Length: 412
Image (tube, rainbow, N blue to C red):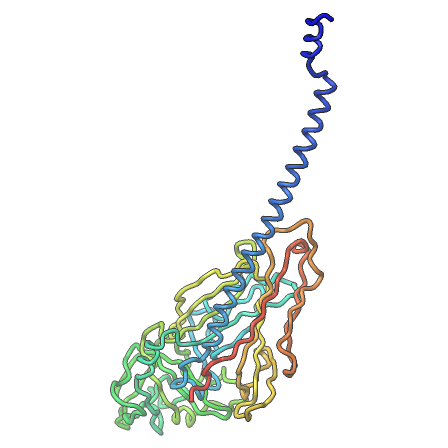
């Protein structure tokens, strides 16, 4: 055999057809690998998205639970008997704000939130889904609160004010503070904020008033405090406050004002704090926000974006009639149905959360069910299930609820 011919046959290269077949096989394998990698990356992104949004939602619910549990904490010396607290601020978003240890209002597109002069952009106009704005009042610092609440508690003198037009207390911004203090030491200080505790039919109504001027009376030898001019006092004095008090408390009269007590809270903006939770969509996706405000001056102390992807914040409140005996069944209510004679003992908070990036391989349920509070408790109110929008049909959803008992709301 010719060895050179054998060597030439062994050295023969691939034909064009063989090369094309090899390239086709390699392309198919490469596309398969890329498909697997792309699918894996997509699943990883979806999984990471879900983990991140769920983790932040759980952290936000922990913070909400802490605030709600502290609602009214340390208010014993101040608000044990306050069935209603009213604050006025003509420079703020709402002239009058009802201040409670805990309360909520429906969040409505285009309306101004209770605090912060923030116009709501959520839920979308016309949406059937609901969300609440949650507000909680508490003393963030026990030391600061105890120092402030150690200020003197005065009684208002039985008589009339010395207002310039000769009218009574209701048409004035002045009240006579008796020199007989309910606790001792320092006097009322100009520039402080005070709560006027007014006895009325369904309990004590507390009015937040500024202390603008302190002067001596001309006819009765007592000390008068004047709350004007100030953005924190209505233009027509206590008469304007009267129009904001629900009829169930009865009319605000000169006699009621002149049987009141004045608690000087001092001037530190961080003595009492109101925390406001709401959903914001200004960044193109829903984010649960938290703002902290001074309960004395309405100034914002801080604002934080807590949890992206929260599409519904809902609040139910468990109530019993004031003075009800132990063992009385709790009734779950939305804030709008809480009566002035109800005592709130527990709150149930629900968060509905979605991922921020769609998962084309997944279709969300037509309705996201929000679990109701523990069975055995009376209705009438309940959480509202969430209906995903068309743009959310490929998002993953989670729901978190937490039942929180209010500690020490009535400090005894």
